[in-house]
Amino acid sequence: MRDTWIRIGKKCIRFLLLLFCTSIAAFALMKCSPVDPLQANVGQTALGSMSAEQIEKLETYWGTNASPVQQYLAWITDFLKGDMGTSLLYRQPVSQVIAVRLANSLPLLLFAWALSGLLGVMLGAVAGMRRGKWCDRLIRGYSLLISDTPAFWVAMLLLIVFGVWLGWFPIGMSVPIGVAASEVSLAERISHFVLPALTLSLTGTANITLHTREKMIEVMDSDYMLFARAGGERGFRLFWRHGLRNILLPAITLQAASIGELIGGSVLVEQVFSYPGLGQAAVQAGLGSDMPLLMAVTLICAALAAAGNLTADILYGLVDPRIRKGGAQR
Image (cartoon, rainbow, N blue to C red; front, side):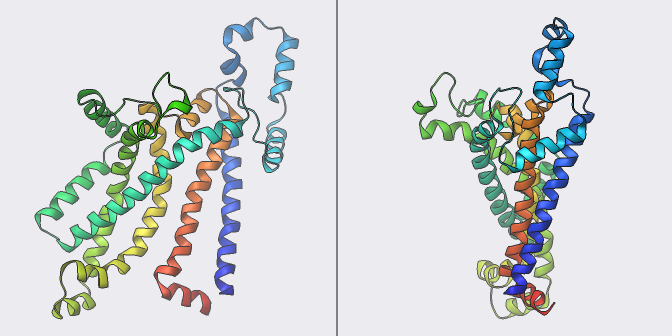
């Protein structure tokens, strides 16, 4: 047990180092951007009408006249104290902007992550157990088609079919336009939620399905599966007793890695549906050179992706006892 906690502690330290390196990389990329934060947020006309003294005061207020090292140290010091800064676009504390956007994006990502993983394992297992049959060809063809299709194209297709032609769902936003947040019903929120979540789920299913299929084929060709079939086991019983546990480890790995893909896909999907989440906030912050907001969004997205990998490492020991024994022996 002690070795398990030591292993988890080491991974938590790597998690913190990853966030630190991510913050440095994101800050460096922001400083290399050709977008002038003063011009992007004040406007070229207003900036041109200001005197040199006014521009200097504005740079001092926003801290853009300091060296990059001083700016980063000032930012990371405030961030560690819980102060994420003030958004240049929204003129609000970044923590408030993040709280609103994260409340919209987190349910979307969690639903898409869970549904894509469940569908991917189920479809991959069925395709692997029915290798060469019509259902295997259908599932594999669908997965290959979706894996090569951009997420924004799938989003636009679903928007046109179910939002415009059929009119079953709204064409955008997270709530009806012109309605106060306190007056929005749960059914209305769900109706705005369905198409973005379905888009992320469909695009995230393909890779998990294909990898699970290959692993299931390998399991089906093993000696213990041959022995189980010789004993009369078939269908779901065969999968549940002998196949599921052997395909769970690669499925967990792919499911953890898919968090980063879902976050990246949500940037495009939220733009298509005008869904006010973290992805849309990241695009707006990048175009407007809103460094405090973009840095906070980047770190939160990196933390979500790294937390998924950390959770997968912990689950390995629960799924496969050999990993726990191996860690204890080391």
